Each structure stands twice: as C-alpha cells, then as structure tokens.
Image (cartoon, rainbow, N blue to C red; front, side):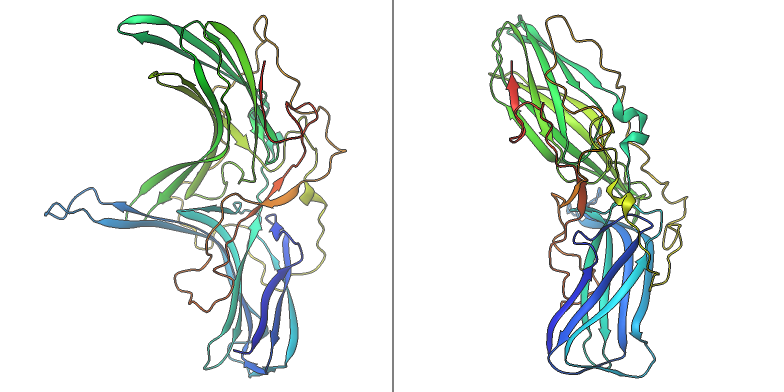
Length: 441
C-alpha cells in the first residue's frame, strides 16, 4: 500500500519508564508515494483487564453445562491527540521519503507496574494512526513498560530471615519406621530480580527411608478478580524458577544442602493501584522420599521488589538520575488513576505489601551446624553497576484489542515487559559464577 516503513521508537532502548516520568519518542514513516491524510493522531492508553472462561454451576436442564466468559476492566488513563492536522481540518499531503514526528507524553504518578498473564494484563500502549479520508488508515500499535517502584528497604519485613520446620513419621503395616525432622532457612524475605535466594535445608533422618530429592522453587501466585457478569476470583500459580537436588541423604544421618535459586525478570509483588489483579510470591520446598511414602512441603512467602535491600546489593535506583527537560506534547494526565476506574464500592483496592507470614529473625544455628558463606556482600553497594532491564519470562502473544482490525501493525509481535535485573553473582555464593548450584556437605 505504498508504506515502506512504519514504526514508533522510544528514546530508551528498553522502553521502560517510571510513573510520573515523560515518555519521549517519535513516529517514523516512509512512503513510496505521496499520501493525503487528515492528520497523525496518537492514542495513548493505560489499562488492566482480566478475562477467562468458566463452566456454569448449573446445567441447562438437559444435563449440559455451558461456559461463560468472566471479565473486568480498569482504566488508568486514556487520551487521543493529533501531532499534525486534525479530525476536521484540511487535507495534508505527505511527501515521499522518510518522515519523523516526535512526541512527549507525561505519565501519571499513581500507576501499577506492567504485567502479563494468560488471563489478564496491566498494559500501556501507544497507537499511531495516519488518518486517511475515505481509505484505510495506516496504523501501528506498540507497548511500553511501566516499572512501578517497590523499594524493599521501605519494607521492614523484607529484611527478616525465614526459618520453618518440616517433619513426618514413616509407618508400614502399623509399625513405625522412624521420622524425619527438617529445617529450612533463608537469609531474608526480600529479593530483586537477578539476586539469589539461598535456601539451606537441614535434615535429621532417624528412619530407614532415604530422601530421593529436594526441590526448591519460586512460585508466582496470581489472583484475578472478575466483575462481569458476576463477581468471581480465579487463582493461578506458576513456577518462575526451580532447582532440584537429586543427591539423596543417607538414612539415619543428619546433613544439609544449600540450594541457590536465581530470581528471573518478574513483576514486583503486590501490584499496588490495581484492584483486579493481586500478585504474591512464595518459595516452595519439597522433600521427596523413596518408595511409596508421600512427600512433604513448605511454602515460604517472600517479597520481590525493584530495589534490593541495601545490605544485600546496590543502594541506588537507576531511574533516580533520569532528568527530562522537554515539555509534553500530549495532554498531561491527571495524577489520580480515576479515568474509567470503578467506584470504591465495586472492588476495594488490593495490593499493599505481601506479608511474609510469621517470619522471625534467624535464630542461632544448632550445634554442629554452620551456614555456608553469606550470600551477599555487606555495605551500601555504591560501587556496583546499575541494573539492566531484561524481558520478562512471560510475554503477551498479541496486544491487539477486540475492536482492532487485522491491518494494524505491531499488535501481533509478542510483547514482554522489561524489569530491572541486578546481574551480579556474589563471590561467596556456592558454585558462583556458574548457574545456580546445589551444594551438599
């Protein structure tokens, strides 16, 4: 159709911004023939949506069950404005060749971070439309990332160590075969992507049953709240990182393993300012046994943030040094997430901060038991480089809305938000700098 190139480019390669910042970019186009347009308009939106299908509880009278679609929407801002021309103005003829149209958009202050899930998302998009009279418009739609700050240093519970016990008794034909007492210890309750969760599992096995393997996984727990056609909550859990120790403990022994689990690029906990999606993280420890004996497991709530604990890594927020002096070319959005938001009575704002249960400070280690080397250096981390921004492990297959036609470019390109990742392997980490390792002593 005479379009050689159509793109929306941002001033940052990562296209990641914090609430309240200026989104600076440009619309680039190259045509092989002159084009007559009314104008070039941008449609900027920030919204959340959940949707899934569920079977109705009652049948239709003939024993057949039907499925219904449950959904909910939440809008944070929306604006449409023209960079050149207007909807009712005179026709403009664009010349052949490459054209560049810059734009600046001011984001509101109170926004939840970008998030993608199979049944929901928090998404921020820009659609550029070359409005052509009596013809198909030339359109392209792209998404960018909003990184809502979640500073673990502001969460007192994030620095608390975690200690939990696990025990079981083995029986066969009503005869007791002994028992297993295990203790799981984690140095702190808060981590940022790129850091390592170091779990120490101590086992005292007084039975004749051998431990087959120990699994440690970081799991993302998502709650989706629908309001149409009625209220319903869907809970989903997915594994974001996992390590398995397959070297078994011998029976009638006392031993421990240290398992290092790297936190991948994932969204921060809580998703504050979003009332239809809740997000939490847990570390699950599973001990599996030989034979027909059932495994035992423990779940340890943890916090995932965008700024790590100062004592464990850097004392800096890379976004703090960014200064934007240009004025917005788009209308400035109000600082309240009120555009299109449901009334408070419909759904109370969830979020806040994930609580790490009854976590207590790390008690002294039992006699004969010592921790491995501390997982992180002490100090304020001022000599460490800032984080990189890496794509999330989960991405959206498409960012197309239901009302958009097939000819809109960009919507079918998979989009993954980019989160700050602190790529630093502590020198004292067991097995560093290779992949997360398992150490048996």
